[in-house]
Image 1 (cartoon, rainbow, N blue to C red):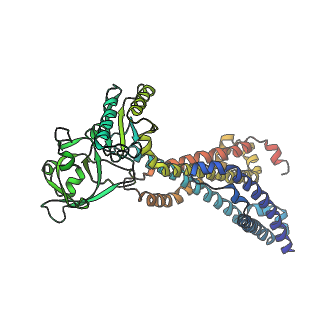
Image 2: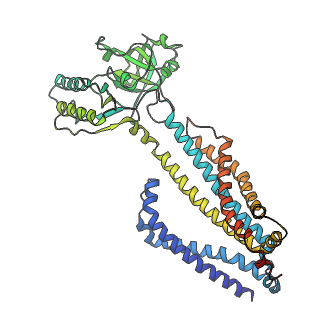
Image 3: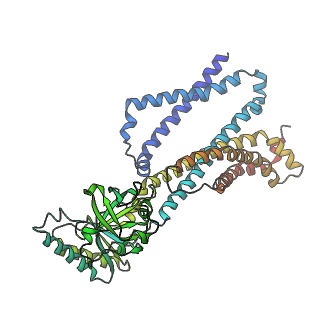
Length: 483
C-alpha cells in the first residue's frame, strides 16, 4: 500500500536524522570552546542539557525526518512498480532537477561566504592601514599613578615629581620624547564642548573634542604644525590663554586659511564663556578608529594634569629601554605598580569586532564549501553510475580518459557557473549594505566575485574529477557485460 511505503521511508529518514542529530550535538559540545574564542561569545555547554534545548532538537528532528522522508516516499510510491524495478525512476527529469538545484544552492552559499570573507578582510585591512594623521608606532603609554595630584601634599611637590620623571626619561638616548596628556588615541572616553568664533557669524561654531596636553605632545605623535606655533614654556600664559586647533576646526569656524585663524579668539561655552586665543593649527587626526568620522579637536595647554604618559622610544634594545623606564617610574612614583601598554596594539583593539566577524566568515565559508563538495561528490558519483554503460561504449570507440573526464565534469562546472551568476548580485547588495555603516570604506570590485567563483570552480573540479577519472579508467568490459 502507498501509505506503508511512506511510513517506511519516513521511519528510515527518522533513524538517519536521529544518528546525525546525536553526532551533531556531540560535535557542538566539543567545538563550543573554539567557537567562543573565535566569536567572543560566552556560550555555556550547560545549555545543551536544558529541557528547552532538547525540545528544540526534537522539533528539528521531526521536521527534518518529514522533509527528508516524505518527498522520496511520495514520489516513489506514485510510480508504477514496473518503472521502479527497471530503475527508470533514477533518471527522471524531476529528480535530476532537484539534485542539481540543491547543488546550485549549496555553491551559492559557498561563493557568497567566500566573497564576503574577502570583502571583510579588505575593509579591515583598509581601516588599519589608513593614515591616522599621527604616528602611534613605538609609543609606550602609562596611566597616571594613584589619585595624583591628590596624593601629594601640595601642587608644587606634584609638579616636581612630574618634572623629575620626564627629565629622567629624557636622559636615555633610546627615548625620543615624552608627553603627558588628558587622553590618548584610541580612547573612547572623550570630553566635547561647543566652540564659537568671537565676532563671527552665528554659524561659525562647532562641537569639538577637547584634549589637554603638555609641550611635547606633537613631537611624540609626530603631528604637523600647519600654521602658528606650538605651546611653549617661553609663553608662560599659554595654559590660561591659548589653544591649538586642527585644520577641520579652521573650516568649521569659518576661517578661509589656517593662517587667518592665528591670533583669533574662541569662546568655549561649557567653560563659562572662557575666551582663548588660537596659537597654532595642526593637521587633522583620528582620535578613534575609522568606524567614526574625523572630528575637530581643540588642544589646551596643561603640563601636569594629564591622565597618561606617552613615551616615544627606539625599539632596537627594547628590554633594556623598558627596564630604564621602569626604574625611572619607581624613582618618581615609589610603591606604584609599573603598568604599561603599546599604543598601536591598544588602538587596534577597536577593530576586535571586525576581526571576529572575519574569523566567523572564514569558519562558515569553510563549512559551506565542505557541505557543497559533499553534495557535488554525491551527485557526480550518481551521474557516473548512471552513465557507466555510455562511458564503456565511448571507451570502446576510442574516447580517452581526458575526453570522458571532460564530458562528465562539464555539466557540474556549469552548475557552479550558474551559482556565481545567481549569487553575485545578492552578495554585492548585502555586503554593500554592511559597508554603509563605515564612514571610510572600500569599493566592492567585480574581481572579488570572479576570484570567489574561480576558487569555487577549482574546488568543484577537484571534487568532480575524482569520480570522473574513476569512471574513465574503469574496464569497459565490466560495464558492457550485461548488454
